[in-house]
Structures are given as C-alpha cells and as structure tokens.
View 1: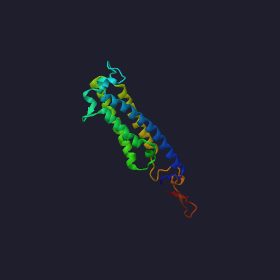
View 2: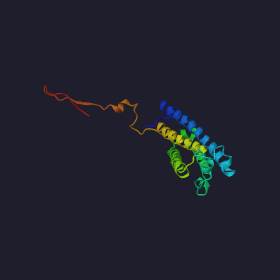
View 3: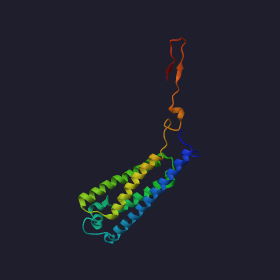
View 4: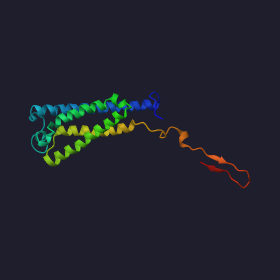
Length: 191
C-alpha cells in the first residue's frame, strides 16, 4: 500500500525529495551559470575565456574546434538548454511530484547528460588532446546530477504492495496445526 502524505513514511519521503530537489537545483543553477559564461564567450570571442590557450589545458582549442558545434548549434548553447530543462525537473516541487512522467523524464535527462559527458571527454582527450576547464566543470556538474538523480529516485520511490517491511503480519505465515486423534499421532504443521 502506498504511503499517505500525512503518514510518517509519506512525510519522510517528502523531506527526502525536498532535499534532493534543493541539492540538484543548486547543481543545475551552477550548470546554467557555467554554460551561460561559455555561451557568452562563444558569441563574443573565445579569447575572453579566463583559461590557458596553450598546452593540455586549452579552452580556446576546445571551444573553437570542429567538435564545438552539433547540428550547427554551439555546445555551449546546448549545455545551457540542458541545464535550464534540468532545473525544471530538478527543483523541489518537481521532486515532490508523484508523476511517473516527471520521475522518468528527470532520470532520462540526467542519463542523457552523463552519456554526453562521456562523448565530450572522449573528444577532448583523444581527438583534440586538450581539456577545457569550464567544460570540465560542466562535465562534473552533469555527472553529479546523474548520480544524485539516481540515488534520489531510488530513495523516494514508492514500494509496490507486498514489499512493506513494517508489516510483521505479512512476513509471518500462519501455521495450521492438524491434531488427529490417537496417542501415536503428533500434530502436523501445514502452511
């Protein structure tokens, strides 16, 4: 049986959801901030990035490479859109929602972000031989959101009927004793 909002279990689930909502909203806002900076640098001049443009740490090389756009859209803009949508799904109100669509959407978006990070890391490390520190901040935020979303989704999930560990009656099966007359017969227990 699902927990009612007024019960201790329901209140505990709501508090947990609010905590994950606050933590993940902070991560998403940070992602919006870094992505906004990268978008600004893209449209003004990538030289505006406060990052080295020589050696392995080379933001200019990464943000101006042929890989810095997908479908003609700068990755910084896609990152900004990702974090804006993420913020809508990661706020405390969305976390308290019992809608399966919101829960699944939140997990799908976080998974998509983590998968994109794997591709971007591969590009930076093996194609460009350069790392952008701001891009790395976006990667870390995306992976943290994925981990936190997975943990939060598991922690706030409602258990299906029959999985309540609080009901002792369901865990103990009743024993039926069949007593047959006769001295040589012992009671037989059946389940």
